[in-house]
Amino acid sequence: MSATDKSQHRTISVNPDPDKLLASDKKHIWHPYSAIASDIPVYPVESARGVRIKLADGRELIDGMSSWWCAIHGYNHPVMNTALAKQLDSMSHVMFGGLTHEPAIELAEKLVEITPEPLQSVFFADSGSVSVEVAMKMAIQYWNAKNRPNRQRFLTIRHGYHGDTFGAMSVTDPVNGMHSLFADTLAQQYFVDAPACRFGEACNADDIAPLQQQLETNKDHIAAVILEPIVQGAGGMRFYSADYLRRVSELCSEHDVLLILDEIATGFGRSGKLFACEHADIAPDIMCVGKSLTGGYMTLAATLTTEEVSQTISKGDPGVFMHGPTFMANPLACTAANASIKLLLESPWQQNIANIEQGLIKGLAPCSQLHSVKDVRVLGAIGVVELHQPVDMKTIQPMFVEAGVWVRPFGRLVYLMPPFIINEAELGTLTAAVCQVLQSLKH
Ligand SMILES: *Cc1c(COP(=O)(O)O)cnc(C)c1O
Image (cartoon, rainbow, N blue to C red; front, side, top):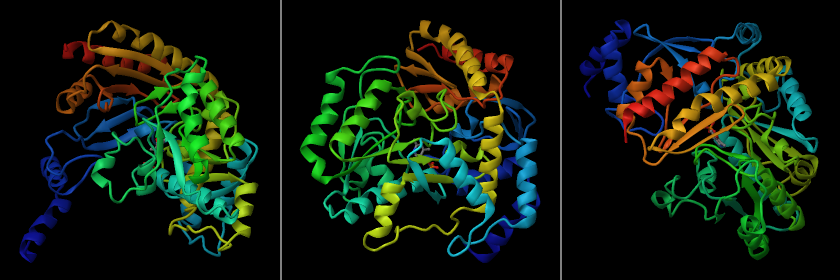
């Protein structure tokens, strides 16, 4: 492109004509898992407040997604805004190498306090995927420090999702995660089938046998088992047996393999417990949190581990943990997290989530009558309608917008995970819109 072409394009930012903005978006910007110049619509947002997202054309949508698990208090929360404005006045960022600050220390203390007791050491990462990379590196460095350098691989179950960077991808479901595309670059990990036992059911010997066998056969190469506890998110929105998770934890102890739990989606109340591992009453050796950590305000994640792991790494060769992001423990992000956790814990969150659970069960029940629907399931503030066929985004997305709701299906899954502050009527609008849109699709 010539210099004159570029200067002509600059007028776009001076004159934000909505059509031109959208044309520019389409021409230049990748959205998540999208194509450039895609004909699937994207909607310009003007603002968002509470559970409502206001589009540039003036329409207001009730939010059913919490911006992918994050915005648990809704948008533009006055308490969050005040906390961030105050922090902005003192500093938005300083490097974390050789410097420290109160927002990070306060957050680390709080995370140690509210997560399972053995987790005592905190590493701040800039996104969920990075916190998973960090967890995997911790496990490898731990075994290296214990003179077990062959333990560099990971065991997990199919249908998992742990993020989009290479380490995280390597333990994400091989089919959903398109492992074939990156075959020569991706680390080879051990996979077993996800358990068939659903949440609320017992787990029998057949359910756990594949994982048990892999551990027995390959434990000398396995640094850790990595799982999303109870809820498998982007890999299929499946809710599995707490008994299974308990068995996995026991097997890890028996075979002296670390357990990494990825609570990035489930953490901070979404499944009805503050952390989903509480359903099984277990504690991991390493835990990742992210997403709703900052109430959806900023990107921040954390990897927590035990003193056994952190001290072993610190005493082993090379004597340090080999990771340190530029924006580590960003003070604004830590402030958002501190405010969000305080808001959550001071709210009647168990009751709110129990109410949402009841509203989702009642409101989504009619969907199970539809021929297109394979399964309807609800856990905590997560409601899932699984279809027989994948949705056509180009058709279904505008239908939800027309119905006044923001619902973003993927594949065969239409699901709701609203902000915890949603009221009964708003939740009713969301579930009715899901039922009505699916019915009018008439598969
Ligand atoms: C979203 C998610 C991640 C990745 O987090 P990003 O912030 O998108 O990198 C990892 N694990 C789970 C379970 C997630 O839901």
